[in-house]
Image (cartoon, rainbow over all chains, first blue to last red):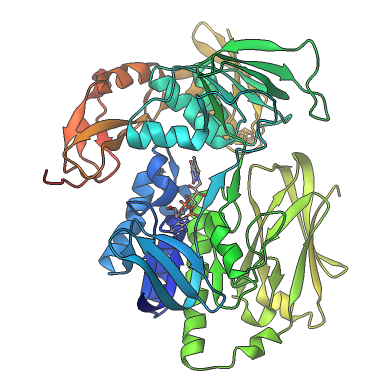
Length: 429
Length: 122
Ligand SMILES: Cc1cc2nc3c(=O)[nH]c(=O)nc-3n(C[C@H](O)[C@H](O)[C@H](O)COP(=O)(O)OP(=O)(O)OC[C@H]3O[C@@H](n4cnc5c(N)ncnc54)[C@H](O)[C@@H]3O)c2cc1C
Ligand code: SF4
């Protein structure tokens, strides 16, 4: 089998992989390879033709492909190597990558560091827990988006959407503009996980009703979907008898959330968080396997690509530093013995990324990203160093659909040499 | 007349009521900050949107190219702009910013490509 050697191998050529590569190069590591299974770089952005990307990074509102193009150009200008139509099959804990494509067949790459940037996939199984047939015409919203925007093919004419995630909302508008009739969006929760802007500009603009606390209870049709029955659900999520309404349709789209794509991570043996479904990482975005880093949607699902690029740049930089340490043969054991602080999410905070911090390895300022579990109004986001409250920030509203963050300063943490836990929680006062 | 709006300025999503009498806005209520007021005035007097879509490409490495109106267009022109895109196809190569349709549906706004498509020799 052919054997290649690189310093850093990046799995996935979406916005995370591209930004990580650019930053690793800036940090002085040159032998970098990006591996992408699709026929082009850019990841999910290629099918996100709507605008709303890059407001933070470029101070202008771009479409997905335009945002991706800026990073792709930089990768090409800087001659960073990449392989398209190539799938990473396996990675060992010693960082031997097995990949495959039709030109080269199966081959191996020895790497000093790995950056995981595989993105996420859509949840589908389990979303429709109703008995009966699975006729044609049921798609995940992202699959429909790919059909319409990349293949140029409309999956149906009369549409019902289950779940009010952003992809579903975006597709409600997209299919309406292409002449389909989107009859209703049913959301089982009491609130929508989608952005306000998408609810207004994708549903309200076109008079598409959003039914909160509703779900699909029956699908009619054997070969192809003919219609669906929607019913209201009670607080426990059970359908309420007598509230059923029937809609004729030939297509049912599912937009019920995203989940990090961690098949490859599991093979390496990195520890996964059961909240984010992504790897657990330290302040350097390094997983439990030294030299393996993660960023973007494979780490935790993001709503704004700007934060993906920012996070990935940090992973790229740290991977490069790791490579330089290995090259100098510095003992990496020292690091493993370093003082490590646990980050504990509680009282409304579902998770944090990173999950641990080694103060000595921190940048001057460290961003802690987190999500809350419900919609809360007028709460304080509080940070405790062990039992001492060090941050108390008023927020008029926090919601599961919007990622939150707090910044911690290295100098502040170094003032507490005995610190063992940092707790992040929501408080009423 | 009364308009009910949700402000999209921030995650708070204030529910606003706008009273209009004889074409003049008389009161705006429900907003928490000034941005809500500005949004309400724009939405009631001259709402605009950016429109994005795709068109077919001939002889390219991809079969579709994504496009957008270069700037916002009046909201009530969205479907006219979509109609102007029907049946349109372009020849590769296509570059970001290439004009696909100029002055789409008489809005004075061009439709431009948002993706690069290379030509392939068949
Ligand atoms: C439908 C949708 C709408 C969105 N709308 C917005 C918006 O309006 N504004 C905004 O800012 N953000 C938006 N986002 C969020 C943002 O675009 C994503 O968070 C971002 O693209 C994630 O980047 P990524 O690189 O982590 O993942 P991806 O873009 O998914 O890239 C991962 C890449 O890895 C490749 N890959 C996976 N496994 C392998 C393997 N084993 N071998 C080789 N390659 C592999 C995949 O092919 C893919 O190209 C949206 C996201 C979605 C899905
Ligand atoms: S009015 Fe102000 S506070 Fe309310 S949603 Fe708009 S921007 Fe946010």
